[in-house]
Amino acid sequence: MSANPNGAAAQPFARHPIRMTLNGQPRQLDVLPWTTLLDLLREQLDLVGSKKGCDHGQCGACTVLRDGKRVNACLTLAVMCDGAELTTIEGLADGDQLHPMQQAFIKHDAFQCGYCTPGQICSAVGLANEGRAHDGAQIQELMSGNLCRCGAYSNIRDAIEEALPACRRSGGE
Image (tube, rainbow, N blue to C red; front, top):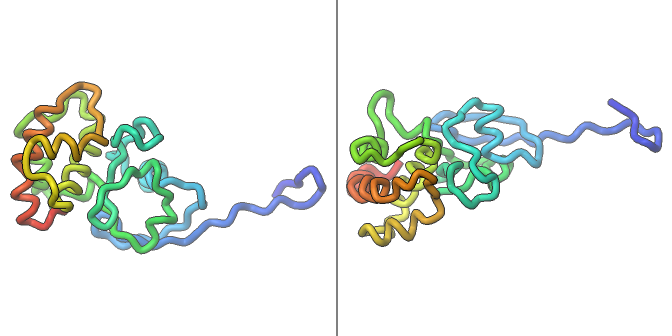
């Protein structure tokens, strides 16, 4: 411990224990109170599929699923996920069997550089879980929080529109 200007020993920051189910696996972790979910995933757990785009919740590149709902991992503190079920892009496939949304993205070439793709796919699965989008215009509106700098929007929309029925039949995740 180092001394502060008043001569007293500085106290280390307290870590907080959290429990979660991450991609189907129970996890127990100790995190600092300011650790974002995105930093926990990428820097501590080496799950680098979720991307750090804007770090302000405006681009959606970091989208993951918390209890089946889409969240921006850059704006979510890890301590807020205590007891949650989290799914990242790494947890969508079942072994070698891709999730229907992943299959549709490949079929429709719904990516160019691929940077936003994990967030797009997780957001689309969350959209399917919500059950509110029924046509291309609704998909476009409800996916507006996920940006693609390459402009693959029409392919993304087509992929989501095709995969929605299969996702709803399988229960989303």
